[in-house]
Length: 637
Ligand code: ATP
Image (cartoon, rainbow, N blue to C red; front, side, top):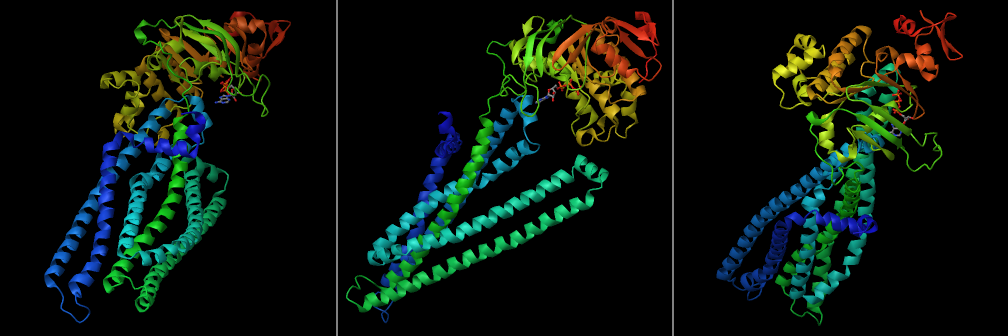
């Protein structure tokens, strides 16, 4: 299928139908059931004629009824009713089974596919939209996959079988009846259109109420409203939308009711027309075959002719809107994962990794469509430009620089949260794209400023890093991260459940927990992205103490704003506007008198040390500073 085919209406319909392919046998079974039940449905009205003409009044209105035939016919009619009822239950069961399986498969496919997409996709998606596609869009097609498909088929079969039965009873009356179909069709179409409009407005309004609730009653939303004193406005906004929802719900109910009333009027009038017409036919010259039984049977069948038409009109709308849902679901499934294992990517065991990290002419653009120039919104084309460095196994390398310089972006490339636009990142000489992603995750550990915890027990949060860890290993890790004692103070110890996003723990505690998680993960390469910036000085000292043994026998990449935390790094890279502008040790960089020296000066300014670079020499209070002076200088926080 080409892209155009896939996105055209018929393409989407074909793909939607394709979701039923694994259940072909069941679908065939359902179709057979529909054919049989719909066919059986005309038997009783058809037999009504025989009941009247042959059993009740075989010799005219004053004659004796044929009781024996009456019993036979009544028996057949009862049997048909019971059998079609039983088949109906079977059909509902089968359609639900198939429908629910189709939905389950779609949800599974969507979730699996989304898990494979890169971070870039998630940063670009609207909050809640992804969850909504899995929950609402797949939920939205439930009716179509469980009811509508079978409803369309059975209504068509009912319509055709009824038409045949009516023609067999009296083709003359059938012609008259068919002539009224366009009028009925038009009526259903007009009222149906109005109903749909109100329904979709009501749904929009309901969605808006949900969105407002979701947005404003989340932890962040309620905090924002409280802090900015916007609660009254929020209440007002909710009230207005709530009011609109209620009004629309009433309108929806009323249009629904008028639709049914119109249908009822039509259904009541249709037999009346037939009675009058039959009366004329009986008195006129073309009373061909018109009997009391014909009229009763015919008018009973009439219902079965009109009802499917109005249901089909309704269903066609539902099908169209569900096609739109299918289209959105397929839209997600069609996004090609931009970060995939190369065909020959191999598994690497963490034990075999030394931890040599190399960036070779790396460039990265988050906005690849913006040409070589700065994008219209001011975003730089290159978030990283010509990045080269080489970190030896076991080294501590620090990345510093102004906000937005590209430090985090550099760190994202090592575990392949993003791939570079050009250039290569190598671990022990192997391009990271040639390492299977799951083994790369075992090699690289990441501690960020915002540590995410699942709504689960502390123990399970820690086990996420190493599912088969023993309680003893967990405790060793927690002790090393200086969080064990705090955990033991909690009511349920390691079984304490942390709230949504870990809200019941302080920032520093969350941070230490995530460090314990990385200790358990035991990666060869450790990335610390502002890992201690959320902590106070005491906690920071604790965490630094926890990090030191952790860093000792592995390659560590530390991103830090507070220079005091990385002054002892083996090498410091200074990043500015996506480029590495300087590198060296703390002392060497101070001596260079470049960006690092001025960042250092800014952080230690106004305090006990004032350093100035003049002609490449670091000056403090007019005196030239030696390296030892710089390293031993007291730092202001
Ligand atoms: P900070 O110290 O403030 O955390 P940083 O040096 O780590 O900053 P990055 O987060 O790497 O900077 O961002 C580098 C640039 O890339 C910034 O201009 C940022 O706006 C941009 N950027 C980061 N992530 C994305 C993204 N997902 N899509 C588009 N642009 C992005």
